[in-house]
Amino acid sequence: MSLNIVVAVKWVPNTQVVNIDPKTGTLIREGIPSIINPHDLNAVELALQLKERYGGTVTAISMAPTSARAGLEFIIGMGVDRAILVTDRVFAGADTLATSYTLSKAIERLKPFDILVFGQETIDSSTAHIGAQTASWLRIPYIYYVTDVEYLNGVVKVKRKLEKRIEVYELPIPCLLVVAMKSNEPRSVKLSYKLKAKMENCIEVWTNNELGLTRECIGLRGSPTRVEKSIATPSVPRKKQKFDGQDVKTAVKWLVDKLVEEGLKIV
Ligand SMILES: Cc1cc2nc3c(=O)[nH]c(=O)nc-3n(C[C@H](O)[C@H](O)[C@H](O)COP(=O)(O)OP(=O)(O)OC[C@H]3O[C@@H](n4cnc5c(N)ncnc54)[C@H](O)[C@@H]3O)c2cc1C
Image (cartoon, rainbow, N blue to C red; front, side):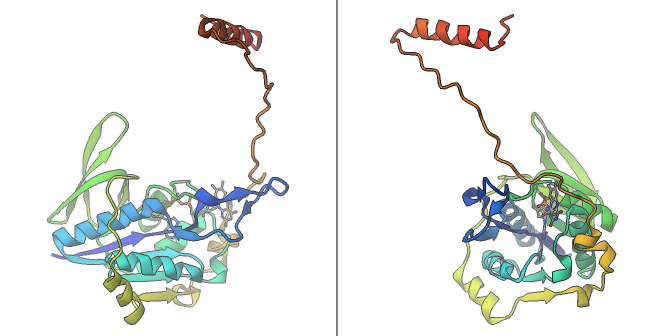
């Protein structure tokens, strides 16, 4: 049996180069390039490994503005067969509830699917909610922190890595796997695959005309989350005191005395 694998990828601003405007407290997005969420590359790698081992197809799905087409071309360059860009102005302003609802409705259109593969979290919002919420909308089992997967006769056997132990679970298909960050080495892009994305039109665009979702459940209207205070850079008050001596022992005593003055309790 070949597997119908779906992998979810998010198009995110590269937060490693994002700064915060100290006056408005908002992200300065101008000139910031977007990338595929780095942890989603681990999800793509796992999906491709499953296809190589058990046969089948890998379809990538992303809810994003149209600029995400570049990211999906990148993913096809890694070897994904098909990509769906879910994009429409009515999806804008979605919190995790509306995002996972929209994704689940789009994924339902890809039925029959066997294994959904999600990244652990994103670098721009990092709630790590979307995998669990999407599985809940679809009423399928899910598991987080997956590092290894085997498949046999309709059952997926996964290893997941917790802080001090490895757990092994079996899930019936269809199921959703959330891949542990850095659990594999994402492969590089092949130019021939990228050309395929351009030549064969492997990216399909689905708007709400295709999904037909009611406005109360999507975008800003379907999002109960309200951010009460915008992001702020914490100010770290410093007393700027400096030890002027040379001797290490005296320096340590000086430092400990200062900390005790500030309220440090030595037990
Ligand atoms: C407190 C808070 C309030 C927020 N309020 C708002 C708001 O009012 N308006 C607003 O616009 N946004 C808001 N957001 C951002 C919004 O919730 C997220 O952008 C979105 O729901 C995805 O969540 P995430 O990035 O945390 O995904 P995570 O749960 O961290 O992502 C896990 C995985 O899910 C998949 N995934 C996530 N998003 C997508 C996607 N779009 N397409 C495909 N796969 C995906 C990826 O595989 C990803 O690795 C808020 C976020 C927070 C933390």
